[in-house]
Image 1 (cartoon, one colour):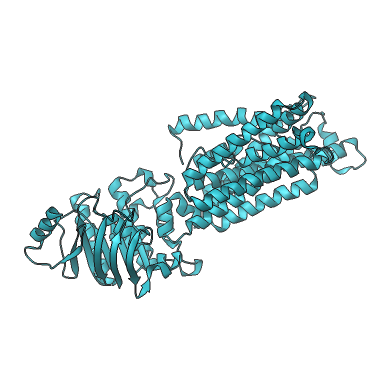
Image 2 (cartoon, rainbow over the protein chains, first blue to last red):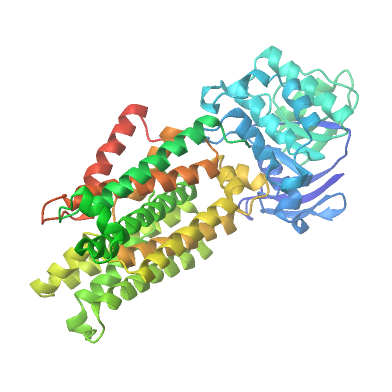
Length: 233
Length: 337
């Protein structure tokens, strides 16, 4: 379980970007986080991944404070798929996927069965020998997701995984993530701007505003409530 | 990861090329030696050519190889560190620091009375001290600001300052001293004794082993800083180590061979275009091989075989290196990092 009790999230202490964020993320559940542009979704994710130190409060993973993890231990607990920076063009897809081995020692490398489950699930088999620069944005998005999943962590944070995907690919990726959460008992937290996603009962909707992280119950009018919250912010 | 047959074949060709160039380099020199005399000279200690081959040409070829490996590796690591295709061993200012040290010794000896130290020890000693001083300053800056771009700018600043001090020293020194310094700055693969060769080899080996041990984290660097961090790589630590290892290697190289341009910049580019891979282990091997080939070839040209004259190696590496880089840029339409 990841527990957060963030009083303030900031780049500069005088102007916090968000305050009063409390939440609990458990395994076997999928969390969709909505929020307006610039509200701090990415900063919140970076904080959870240990890449942003500007916050006041407490973050624990399975009872252990985030800052007490070594970088390697953290990379075995929690994987983070971030929005793209430019990438070295001579990575082949299979070479990029192998980066997921880095947090592990030689002897305990990635479970082959899980590897083929992910590659098949994301429909990447035919791209394995291609260069990243030859892929479309959407295909690259899937490669990034696969690399993140192959890190074999219990907790997975995805920053806008559905960006650049067409309607069909988006729904497929969404279903794959839902299946993964249920079957492999993972905890996935993702941010998105899509309202048309198909929800399951172990899925949760959260709305990030500048003053709180609000959980919404899955009911008929939850979409309207979400829009109301986003507009009020 | 399995090494593909195409890579094995490529490396075999490169090694073959290296052997051929090594032999050519040893065979050709300012004094013409016929093939029969050459083979006799190799084994027969009483032959006059024995001394030429064993005391001059083989050490010169070996030092060319080591210079190529050292500069190639340093350039490769620098380009990963700064994620910048224009990075080379000189960007940190370490080479210019070495030059400043040498200038202080050669040009400033009248001023500071270093005359009692023999130039054979004095130049490498002062050059290493200069490189180390710049390296130390860079590390102090890096401890405070952990940003590669700032580091790059700091390196350029140190280079400019060193360059300015060298100009000042040159302005006030005698023509004879100036000539000596200019000759040093042309670079040289000549006259390396066993001890110098050993130090050079040691620094290359250390740099290679460091990079090999950290091949996986370095690959994560290629995928970007954030990626490396999320994969649990201690980014700051690896950066610090890259600075130390490349700084020392370049320091030792500059001390013994003078500042040699373009090798560190162009070799990683050639290697990337040939290999087209993100695999750091493969790139380390190819950068070392291509670096040695490049300097050996430049050295053959610089010797102007059969003539009593020889060209400065530094000029030859630039004259050959720059068009190659230009060709790569035109071919790929951009610098690829």
